Length: 85
Image (cartoon, rainbow, N blue to C red; front, side, top):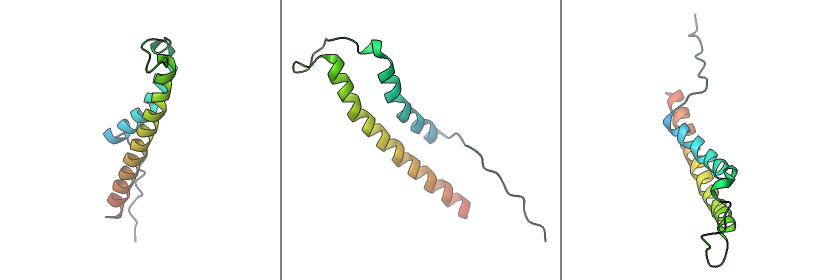
């Protein structure tokens, strides 16, 4: 009556997880690289670039976070489905 040894499945780096990480890191890099947007031109309907660039990243960050979450859910379902078989 011997049992099969448990397989410890530690952290696994997959292409999907790399995409998730990039989606979550991109807004931080964009906002921390101040030199790329510390200017007033081009203005958009009278709003200096500095301000509308940051506001655009609010929307972009929301979209990227949603994409990362959906990919994570899909990845977790795939991992759980593989363990049950």
